[in-house]
Image (tube, rainbow, N blue to C red; front, side):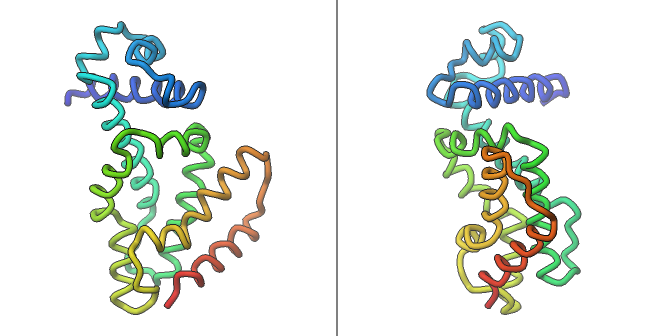
Length: 188
């Protein structure tokens, strides 16, 4: 895609995300998305042939944003706990900086093909490689990476949601304690 096409796609995805937060996935239409993106209804069809294609590519976009956030400051030479800690903080900070994503978490799960997209892209993810290496080195439990994610890193997601919706503040010390405890949950 040319740069302008990437910009237009980002504009359409931003509008999709805003509309999902305001009215839910079930209220989305190509016309509403185009209007929210400040483009004509016909223009959106230049980029996406239909709503299903738009939502599938949007699911890929969301997964890609999340995996890019996880990989920030990646250093696979550091001890496994330090790598895990960095990933946990990356998720926490990404969600803190992107409250629209927190608001839409349940909506994402309802996106058509969302689980298929996740299952397709997950094997190449940094988290999956981290798990495979840590399992091979007998540092963490020999469980699938999505289960290890649920036992460990998903705490960052859940706490972000709670803090956003219940207007809670958690100290860094408390979060460090959560990181240590969830690490112990996945250790061998």
